Length: 141
Image (cartoon, rainbow, N blue to C red; front, side):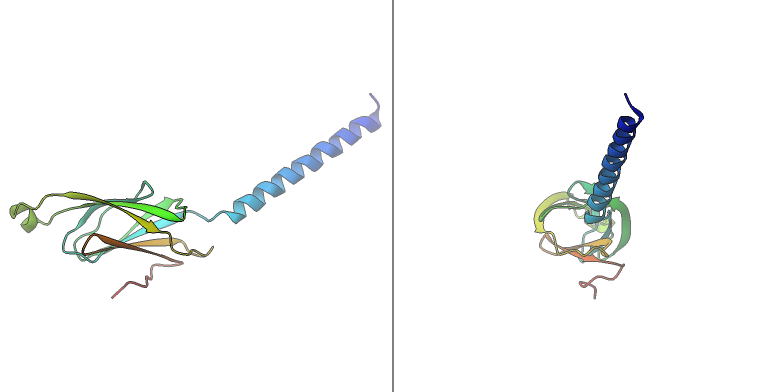
């Protein structure tokens, strides 16, 4: 084998490596980053536990929230939100039972800057989702 042939093989391998690395970087940049799940409860019952597409998100007190869970990849046009409705001490004394609820919810539009998926639980087993780049949410107040 001549030195010229060996040199051409090295150039070809280096060129292929550069193309692969650039392709990987472009693919990585195009993917959305991981998300923080931020829970908000607007109900009289606490959220004992919840998940979005099987990414666990913790709990929230009745009419409470503000807990953040890091970091999950949340993707898809429709998201599955499942939660367990907990009970306050008074609700336990009244015989209220825990309940598990599952809803299919459209994934709101997300920009590359959006890091927080706000998960809002409302009366009537309703759940709304909202992406934002920070802890502010459009469903507050």
